[in-house]
Length: 127
Image 1: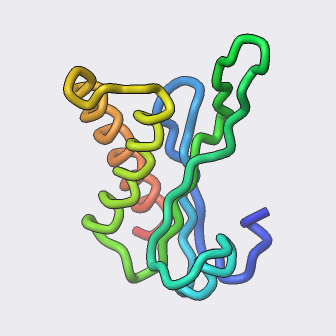
Image 2 (image 1 turned 90 degrees about the horizontal axis):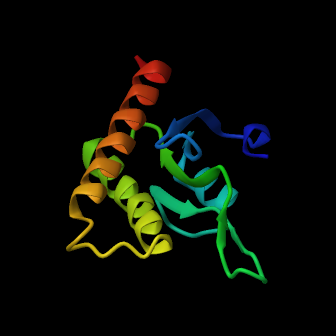
């Protein structure tokens, strides 16, 4: 579990609807972020959780923790946070087959909720 990983400074959850949330992790170095996620050379990273498909109904079952955002302390600001939040919103939109033209307002609202929750969590942990 990430909370037992060396270099993890803080983490918080960003609920974005009644059933789902994104977990945010802040690491002390880019190397630790990359090591924890088995990636190379990143100061920010977002991923969606694994999904399950009901074999009978073909329904996609999305777990409560929809995804994760990983950042490096002192190396992220508004731009990097927005970038990773957009990834999460895009994963959600793709998983729900949203058409960006007809679902534009839903996408904007999702990004608004994720952004507000992200910065509330940030300030609760670092200010």
